[in-house]
Length: 264
Ligand code: AMP
Ligand code: MG
Picture 1 (tube, rainbow, N blue to C red):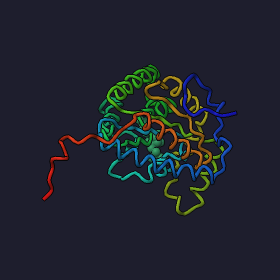
Picture 2: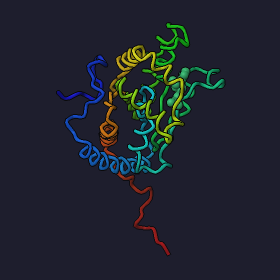
Picture 3: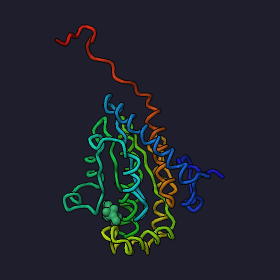
Picture 4: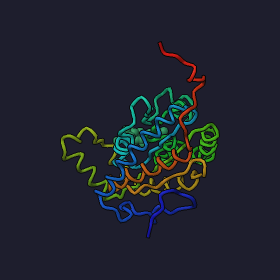
């Protein structure tokens, strides 16, 4: 049975297969992804030429789910000057001295640009909830605040696309092992990944809640099957192309009568 990508009603994460691939082969998906990625680059040019909208690609997922890899592939042909990427880490003391959305709002891209959020303000209802970093009433109030924040962005011409990269616990184990065994990946290994892995079920529950409470028509969540990297990239690229094509962008008209311009 076809597995939906976009979340339009209440979901149970356990009904979503992390290794889903819509019957596609790796070769087929890669070929399609390349075409989609070229299209994304064309659409970004149009977005920049008009500079009245921007697109936020928000990536969330457990460690090793491929947040970096997906951003790299999907934006392969987009010039770096058109992309503003922000990785949301443990908050600094300056960030902690503000409300939790302050750093997110500062990271919102200029009109005409893409913004990539590698993790996001959703950490404030994910890791913060699972690791008990603030009292329950504090994080519980945040779902509604996040919806209001995203409504503000949407009303101001931001397309907010949220992706949960859904991997299985087994696939995470394999990827963590690779980080230990492959010298080119050793640098990615962090002991805290193992600590977080102990809380796997709590994280899945927190993700499920965030997705259910914050999937709106103006800022939908997408559940991306991410055990196959090639299907993950294909699925995200497809969502990005669809969202940008909906804008029906045209090349801007000249501001002056160009027929009267003489170049000597
Ligand atoms: P990485 O994405 O591997 O570079 O790791 C970044 C780490 O920062 C992750 O373990 C996140 O859970 C953590 N992090 C991000 N945002 C927050 C936050 N608001 N509060 C606490 N930890 C956070
Ligand atoms: Mg990490």
